[in-house]
Image 1 (cartoon, rainbow, N blue to C red):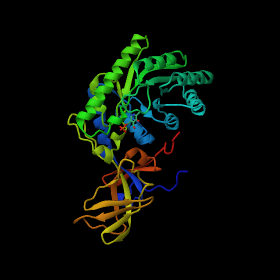
Image 2: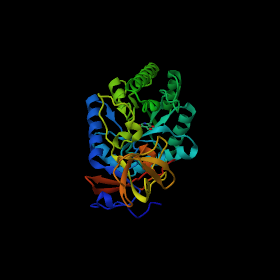
Image 3: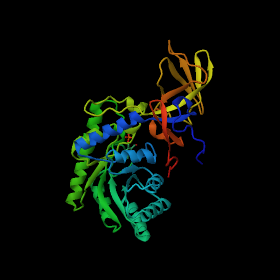
Image 4: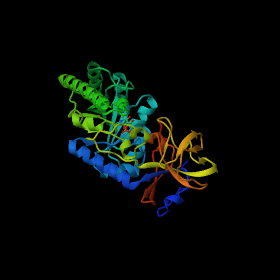
Length: 374
Ligand SMILES: Cc1ncc(COP(=O)(O)O)c(C=O)c1O
């Protein structure tokens, strides 16, 4: 259950926010949205940001105001949250497998008949089953064939498989076959620019080849969607992708900051932070009140925004810092900002996002789809 205690109220100073708290720097966040809006418009590609990164209705609304045509979700539960809050175009960039979940999706589409709801498939039998459930439920879905473009996670591997799955899709009267979902997930954090560019060029070639095979089989393929923060510029440049779906760009994290920046792409700023309090101090050791339950470490440790101290160890509710060199002194009760290693799983640990501008709290937004793991 969401705590009724909020870490802050509008008008508070950053230093008065209770901790651990998730902080969004609004100036930086707005810059990130504007840079992405401009980039997508410049390439004439549709922008469909991924809401899995923030799970927050208010953030998604601002993305819509900044040029998005709709949003992506990864889970049926996430889509439920956004559809219930008037989002009219939601693509689930994932396969939905299992009777219970398929019924839930079909019901969702029935509840929101005016909305466009998309889903991915990579198996003909699964497509037929979902189609039958939608027919029984009297609901409609947009359906995309998921194509594996190097991640080895999901998706059909070949053009022949894509044609087989797409045929099953068009045979379901409740489905509209939209095209190809081709997300190059493993390319997003390749550090070098040439590696990322080459990975997307290969993905675009494969998507083009599959589109040609679909068209040759009389299966119209209107949309090719994919791309994340690390590569969207290459998908946009390719002229093959009609839509991009970056998520992290709005918030950013340590892992993305490790990518070599491509001068032809917009640069995104760290807008997301963890605010933590120094809850114990002994000599050159300072302990913060935020640990693994306040940020994820799957992509590495959080980075202090202050110099002279480094993260020494992290446990459930604590982060121990050690002094290195002549950093500024830290005292008991100080509040410090850290950049999370990976934004998506970090946000999912919090009930609230504290939106701050120039050191003052402007708003506190719920992480509406927090915990929607299925
Ligand atoms: C299918 C899909 N699309 C888009 C994204 C957004 O990627 P990023 O947050 O790296 O921009 C993800 C993230 O994992 C994803 O799984």
